Image (cartoon, rainbow, N blue to C red; front, side):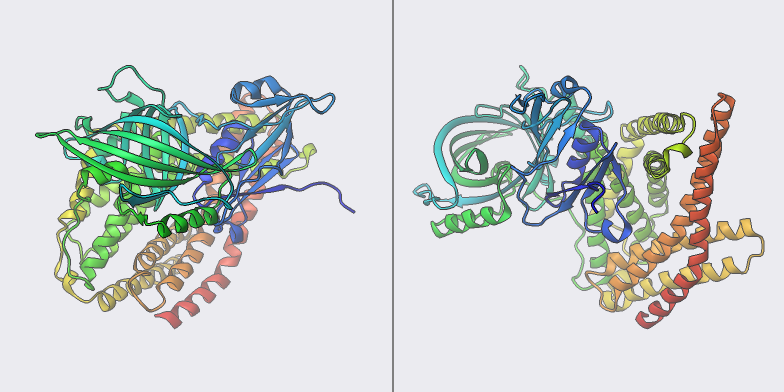
Length: 626
């Protein structure tokens, strides 16, 4: 017999997890809970509240839920109305006031106090005081067309509305050497149309950009400080000035499904002006097809097919500004294809870009951004260690990356352990939770987390950080290559991966030879670090080197994770002991602290007990690869 509803499942597009966290946790007040390890790799996010659980799963051909929706009962409807000023209210159900709101990917949600239901344009509202502004995800295809191009018939794909004409004037800002444009970033002030204001567009994936909005300001020459802050990792003190102007006559056609907007086709006739030593004017015509809240990837592909059949050609430019300015990409050292140097320099360039990409997200305190930036710094440092014969003289750079990772890690670790304790408390029977343990753990750890975020802000604003970024640019553009860099990649780099795994086994053997349990535990932590380095090395080589690099990476990750379970349990026990002592001095009941410490000890001991079998299986599998 059914006893209760466990959860509601909704879908979301790939890469949308940060926005989902900001909405369901930051705005609705639910708490994110970790997914089971076997499901975590699929992406998405799970959220839980009192008697409520919502699962967001990733769908490649995503379509938002417009009719189906979860309905939440809330105790203060007016508070939610204040959060969603554009929400639509009704009282169609007797005894209930309701509002509708859509999540950031278009799924409809309903809330109710004696009623709530929600449909509104979503606005970003971060949980901290980093930076504020509206944010959205832009998914579009761009096409070059001739002046005589005729927009094809779009009937059969939806209800066709339009075209509607707009006159748009956009002023674009960049450094004199076009650092933003070189990275695919656009920063503009636009008037006209439905979204006048300042727009910062940051690339997320091919055809996908994160768009951050700021209200229109009176000044046409000064970039708002909030947006200038978000691009400091790129500008590094260089002046942001007007570099171009786009005057666009736009005709917009929209595809609808009833009241739901599916897709927008913008037919643009553009006059572009480049400002510099000489003023240059260029004219062209292009068409953009952009998904709206109810559209799908299949619909975008169908529209694109009709546009191509009518003579449109997919654009190679990522934006109008890129087409106008044609900036040179960030420089990368010339290397001989197929050599070890070529593989390693390409990987380093990828990780430097990953670190830079996370910088604006960290400044906005977006969920998971600190973690992703720390991972990029760790991967860079690991690669410089592993490939020290290919790229030489990087000891100082490794030290600086270690320091950055430590600053980032403090906030990340506190964030994770706070969520860990909340989940443990949720899993206990109510009679086992005594005293204000939940409030104390959340408040104490949150305060420390915010202090750690303050140190991150300070770090990302300092000259030392910008010197590190300059050094990383130089690492990619002019690395000091050793003799090994010129050798064939397959043999040279596979040997590096083999040596990485051998380092793991040697450290394990050394640890097992230690009789003292405490010293042996410290040595096993070194085994974990060696496994992580072996994993990163194999992952770096997987696209270029044959011979089971992907499988080796998974084996190393398995060792890393089981040892991590033990280490996390030890750290959690130490944290709980400190919190229990503070609670005792405050006269609070500490029974539940002891219970949680016992649970964490159990986790650590089980990991210890399971490790020998996992090690035996892993080393046997690795031997077959190597």
